[in-house]
Image: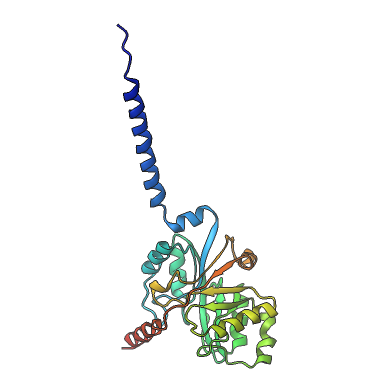
Length: 256
């Protein structure tokens, strides 16, 4: 007697196996974070203005920042602590994604950001000296929130234009700048002088990360960064004005 299997049962078993495999595939796909997906398709979702607990007005731990980035799909950040550089170096060691080491340096005329730095730059020096120090390290010079009504540069128009040849990047959108006209002026200035524009959350708390970012092609380092930035698309979302209360609280707590 020749055994002949029940064809209907074999079909059902195969269908069950296929459905089971599909289910596992869904689980695997869904388990891949947004950050990993972006990494795989070579797209960067970058926040170029992030503060850590090494800033005098932030209590954000490096671990909390990494968790938040992975949660919202940000896979490239610039650490730009106020007058501090240690957090940027530590974040480079810890983060599973691209980190640009930077510093937001206070000068008598306002703040300057250095990207791709190698060492700390002291604050309260003349702006020209800070810019020279950034360039000496092979870094890029950026002007953060240059026309912000409350935090902008203390320079007249002519003095600012005299510095243009030394500027590499203009921050054209800062999520903590509440007045839209200030961002418009920054964009117009960047366009007038042919400078690439960047954007950042200016996050002093992890929850601010992901509101504003630049979606751009991947880059290998400083030299390819500017070209990639020019091809980027800025996604803008202003933070609530209440984030400034958190900053004030952090600063007060640290001063105790």
